[in-house]
Amino acid sequence: MSGHPPTPTALIIGASRGLGLALAAEYAKRGWQVTATQRAPSASGLPALAKQWPKLLKIETVDVTEPLQIAELKSRLIGRRFDLLFVNAGVANRRDETIGEVSTEEFFRVMHSNALGPMRVVEAFAELVPATGTIGIMSSGLASIANNDSGGMEVYRASKAALNTLMRSFSARHPGDPRSLLLIAPGWVRTDMGGPEATLGVDDSIPRVVDTILAQTGKAGLQFLDYLGQPVRW
Ligand SMILES: NC(=O)c1ccc[n+]([C@@H]2O[C@H](COP(=O)([O-])OP(=O)(O)OC[C@H]3O[C@@H](n4cnc5c(N)ncnc54)[C@H](OP(=O)(O)O)[C@@H]3O)[C@@H](O)[C@H]2O)c1
Image 1 (cartoon, rainbow, N blue to C red):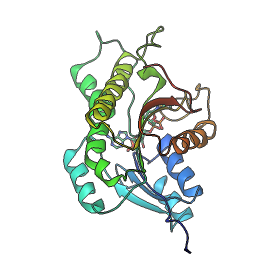
Image 2: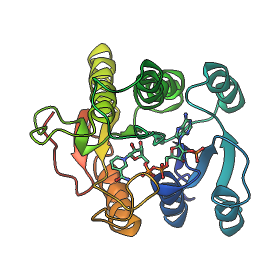
Image 3: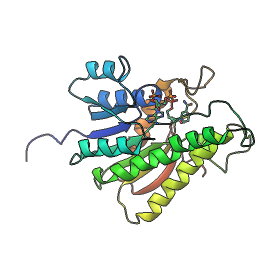
Image 4: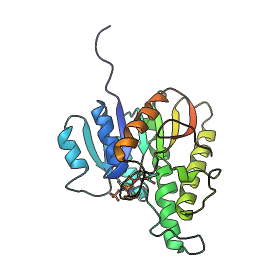
């Protein structure tokens, strides 16, 4: 037999900036064919990355809170195969407020963006991921109910805990699924969301996130792991 193994492929949802953009860059750097999404056309971020990796990086558009856009993206990608589906999209609560203070509208926005939207993407695109592939979502250390001794960020915590439990339900609903299912806690990282006080730079987190995802290839079942590959308590 001759020839090279096929170039691995990734679909990364929510990659316009921050951790998602860095993930797309890291996979392209490692020779993967990457389809990365943004919500709206922009002049920087993904277009700049596509210039750097014209053969490897393709840009798509989707807002995870718009079911019609998810369906349209699916129709554009149907028939493709992705070794990795990774949903990075997420938002913070606009203020660090308690559940007693948050408006219903803001609570719904955070829950929709961080739990319902990402799971709708998983439901829609899982069939494009082969048995040897991986479905990952960007969770958070703050999703851990067991580790919540300090409080704070209540609404955001609730949304990521909801995401985790919905992914556990997805996993439970697919017994015997050979794919690697991952919820990733990237650490506290200096991005627009993480802020300047965060302990890690993007370059401290994302290459290790990718190492962690790749190390789990072929391991069936759902895991909640931090960026160093260590299990996080549920
Ligand atoms: N930074 C941290 O310390 C930290 C820690 C734990 C977990 N996380 C998680 O890591 C992920 C990335 O965070 P980040 O720090 O890179 O945040 P960020 O800089 O605020 O970037 C968030 C990304 O998500 C996208 N996004 C938000 N809502 C979306 C939607 N409805 N549809 C599609 N894309 C959407 C944004 O797109 P636009 O540019 O269009 O807004 C942007 O690309 C999030 O899920 C976050 O919760 C971050």
